Image (cartoon, rainbow, N blue to C red; front, side, top):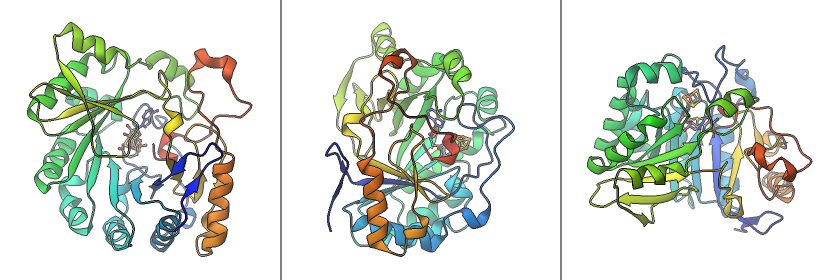
Length: 331
Ligand code: SAM
Ligand code: SF4
């Protein structure tokens, strides 16, 4: 096993693998209203491809694997993927990011197969607003999924993308939710991914304000260390069962500690979520040496940071942002 570093000497020990670009929802920050043309089946990584790829990654010192999408649970062989990946020596952490709609139905099989942690997306507690943000989702399905995941003993985080004038007024409700629920709420800044700059400019909400909201409401919290691989800073309200984290890639870049690689469902490696640069790696999956060389090349070109904030236009590196929407990367 030989660990892998990028050109800035950042160790990479975490991979996010997207297993599909398909999803029944059309969340406003993720996909256009009319949807996107999905990748044809033969362009999507097969189960064997994914398993072999994880084996290759373990040889590069990668120990943590997160599955994402699109919606990973729509993939009919997802339980088998988890089962086979959990049997690979060296994989210490297996998690998934999901909209939660199918968790009540599939959670037990996934847990039994080796899934340890889930990040479930829920941006509001209001059924109508949920329908609006996801363009059609039924909130009860997610709430059932969250309850099922908790009952199964999966470690649960809730991903909350905060948008101005849409759900920013619920930050306080999510904070209070952590008092009685053993979950970690991850407030996430809306990122300008996928040619959505107009929507982004209208709805971007700077998450530094979470701390102002705490102060205004007399909420006392303390910094905590939490299990997980994410870039969130975590806090706990005094006496609360759960905790909250803030992921603010736009207002407060955390690129200096970036340890992650992303694999898209159509077989490309993306070293940075934001930039256009990606390399096709599917062809090399069954040739571990070649596979490593491609991953290393991606890391040799990995930029020091993204440039999501328009007010930093002066610093823009001479590269283009990705053409992909978030559902075609995985988040
Ligand atoms: N379908 C799954 C889900 O919704 O959790 C997994 C895929 S989704 C692309 C992964 C994460 O990215 C979700 O938590 C979602 O809220 C987040 N996301 C999507 N678009 C985003 C954006 N423009 N800015 C910030 N987060 C975004
Ligand atoms: Fe689907 Fe997840 Fe994107 Fe929403 S955020 S449209 S659930 S992939």
